[in-house]
Amino acid sequence: MSAVFAPAQAAADLGAQWEEKLRSGYLDAGLGHHRAPSIAAAYYAHLLRDEAEQAGVPDPESLTPAEHRLLKAWALAHGMPQEVAQGLPTAIFEPTPSWGLRNTGGVGRRTADLAARALREVRTYLDQRVRQEAAQELVRDLLTEHAPIVAIGHSLGSVVLYESLWRKPYPEVDLLVTLGSPLALPRGVFDLLDHGGLIVRGARPPGVKRWVNLAEVGDLIEVPPPAVGPLRRRAHG
Image (cartoon, rainbow, N blue to C red; front, side):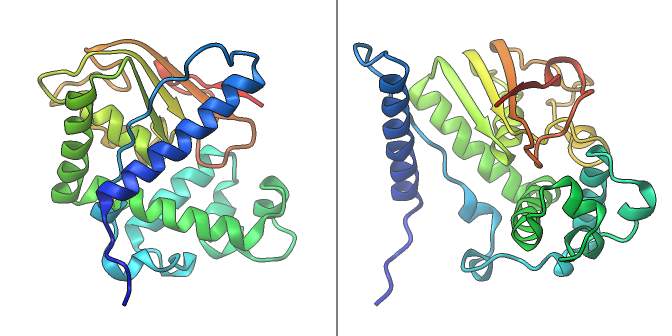
């Protein structure tokens, strides 16, 4: 008998894993005498993926036209020539010398698989209002319950968190940290961001006192500079 999938347990496990990593980081930094903060994690993958998608990774060649356009916008933002981007998704992921392999360290098919899953979830979130609102509600409930001093969003999570912070009543957070974020992706994410009906492209949410955007050098999901306003990258690594 297969185990019953429990999103609440998945969120608890995710939070526990990151708490352990944070404690290890404190020790490595010589801060073992300080108590590492507790972490409450939001888990909403089940809201963005159909049951059949939970088991595997979508093939890049199965991307829908909308997902293909998002992939193209991502590739152009990373400097891929227009003529190469026109041939996506196959051109960037073929296991032969190509612009994609030269500029992604030759990681090939695995990069394709990860990009396909990330793009599918981003596109699902942006295009399907019911799922978008469900993910935001989950995050909003977590913000209300825990009233965190620091809110951290990674990858698509940065998009969900950012838009959640723009819904009234605005949650108050001392520090918003976005990591490996596609928020600034032109024509793909940035132009579709929901600021509660306000035209404030990429602005800091009203209840957030400070916003820091970070990216690892070589991160393929985060959009490289130049970006807009608070989305200017601070690269670490």
